[in-house]
Image 1: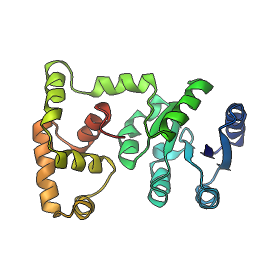
Image 2 (image 1 turned 135 degrees about the horizontal axis):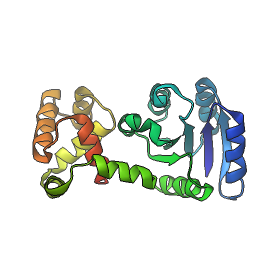
Image 3 (image 1 turned 30 degrees about the vertical axis):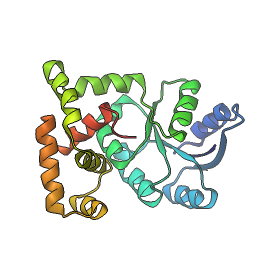
Image 4 (image 1 turned 90 degrees about the vertical axis):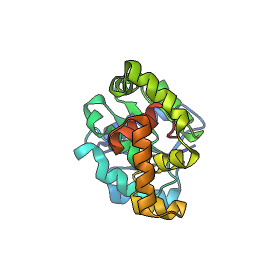
Length: 213
């Protein structure tokens, strides 16, 4: 597995290299500390996964992550982060981030995250799973939401997933060959069925119920 690393401090990248070098199947092919260098090296070396450190980025690195994912939408992105950026997690998921690894996790956790995401799954630290559970509907309402999950049509589930990718009404309509107005109607139906109020709540719901893959 070919790995790219984006990090502002070379000392951290060196530490990651030493940890990952212990695994014969993991090879670091890109280690960049500027977004321009990162994009150039991804183009040249075609890594299988990107480890993106946002601990020293402004606004949770959202602007930089968006640039990378728009240019390389098929490249899985794992964020090296902490709970101090929890306000940005929903935006990260909407952008298409596949996993999160916290700064206090072990090297084994990091390796596990890489393998799971390369295989097409997602990875969430336990602390983040707990946070998601806390912000999700609870009690009777939670039971109702889980039950309502099965009432969504295949079209509604498709649209829900596309909203989670951060697409607009027009972009979703173009992708599904329907009008933006029809997309809006489907969204209203989804919100009503799940008793949610916003796109952000839809994203949290999809993430918590494993609809985002």
